[in-house]
Amino acid sequence: MRPAPTILHLDMDAFFAAAEQAAKPSLRGKPVVVGGIGARGVVSTASYEARVFGVRSAMPTAQARRLCPNAAYLSPRFTLYRQVSEVVMELLHALSPLVEPLSLDEAFVDLEAGGVPAETATVRAVGEQLRRDIRSATGLTGSVGLAGAKMLAKIASEAAKPDGLVVIEPGTERELLGPMTVRTLPGVGPATAETLRRAGIHTVAETAEAGEAELVRLLGKAHGTGLYAMALGQDDRPVVAERDAKSISVEDTFEVDLTDRTRVRSEVLRLADRCVQRLRAAGRSGRTVVIKVRNYDFSTLTRSETLRGPTDDPAVIREAAARLLETVDTTGGVRLLGVGVSGLADFTQEDLFAQLATEREAEEAATAAAAAAEQATGGTEQHEAEEERPRRWHPGLDVVHDEYGAGWVQGSGVGRVTVRFETPWSAPGRVRTFAVEDPALRPGEPLPLVGGAPADGQSSEPAILPKFLSPEPGGTGSEVGEEISRR
Image (tube, rainbow, N blue to C red; front, side):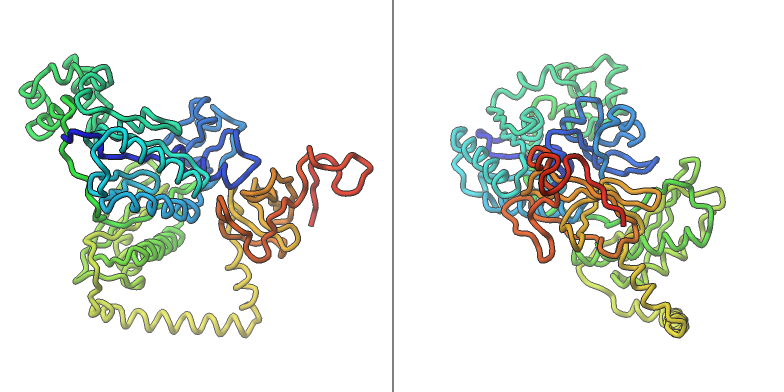
């Protein structure tokens, strides 16, 4: 335990939803829910406006829609979130060399290692300046907790939400923690909380009063001893700059159970490719390939295969994933598939590539023959055009129109896609509706939330003036009200 609150915990406020509100002026101040939008989707983040209605992270999207039917339900845009996260992490690294990221929007910082004087007034000033810098650089807000231990700093940042700062002075820990629920302590999940509840332990103060021996009896030596120390406000865990990932994986949940074996296999191969992309982006390779299959009845199976050495070769990982799939019965229907790689390393074992030589040659020959046949029938250009277009126009997707500039998808269906044309620096824009195959409409890249200039071909002005700026009926310009163009 430190004698001064020099451990900082930053947690961005409703990060994904706040980023969407910053990017879409028409959604500011309104309920926004980011996550899976299908029948089996799960809420990733809800804005504070949506939380008023009871919407929470990890809640099924279907339940969220019942609680808050008028919210904007958007698919995640991880490209944007990573860009913003990189900016925030750079600001944290400017404070100290010891930064421990927990996720895209959350991190611990050891201010003492950055040379910040161990004085409450000084660290408070650093925290306040950090909040101002984050708002200036990203347009978003973050909450800051400062304490002498990681656990307490995280509790402080939670108490500071939204957009605040809380300092826990060393020596006040037990007084602060006492009335809090035992679930506040790290490592106390539903099962542990239930065990403690049956023993009559509900709060942190009651946990401390129970004593170490009783907690060890209830929970075992390691867990009981650690929990007793936490209940006393003692946490000597250091801020660790490098948190080495143990595995890299991707998974998808399907709106309708997959029963076609060919479709299941193609989805596994697609997931394997996505996993390799993440693997390479992290500069890693892996030795063990794992697949995850969740059946129609929610039973979940995993299968793994360890290769001769680490690799990031997509063909090797695809073949291993397909081979593992052959050991799983999917005839009853599959609701979720995942592919992962563990046993990570910073190098690749080149001789692994030889194990697929024969299969690769056959596959390449088949691909070349198919391409030649397609070109002979004049279908290549059409195929390429289809590849460029997304399979679905997901709500929240960035798009660009040749005439109207940058915007985002509000919704789609029955062969139509509705787009609101606005940018982070514009007034709220109007909507237009197009045919889904409109050649003038294409996917776009996320625009910067602050201080950005539009990319080539992406107008920074709203496509149509908002109602309060539109001319009166009969005047020049757009007609008051929502204008729809049919193409």
